Length: 124
Ligand code: SF4
Ligand code: SF4
Image (cartoon, rainbow, N blue to C red; front, side):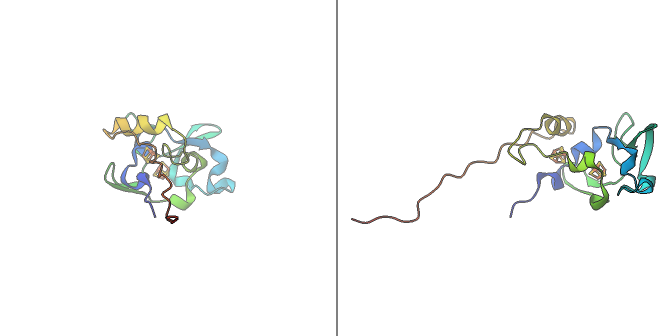
């Protein structure tokens, strides 16, 4: 079983303003606790800590580039759930590269393709 590269990264949680529709907050029937966000516009909220010059979501625990975790993983917004690590689903995500670069981390590489190795040797 492979481990997600995100557990030793966390760069995107400390790079972008993580904003989303306020309807995702618990007071509106969503999952995101209201006290973890701040208002950006009348219809948009952002995770606390991500609207500042050196952003870092207040719900990110650990050391970026070492060992991190989201302390509200099951309740996180669609902005967080929909952000894929580069090549995770076979697609490049340049925004993942940008976030990692900001924190001195190299871009992720595509997973190597493992060639099919025949296991049956036919004998004449
Ligand atoms: S809620 Fe979790 S996944 Fe989303 S930005 Fe914050 S720490 Fe990252
Ligand atoms: S920047 Fe990319 S690898 Fe790092 S936590 Fe975010 S999605 Fe995962």
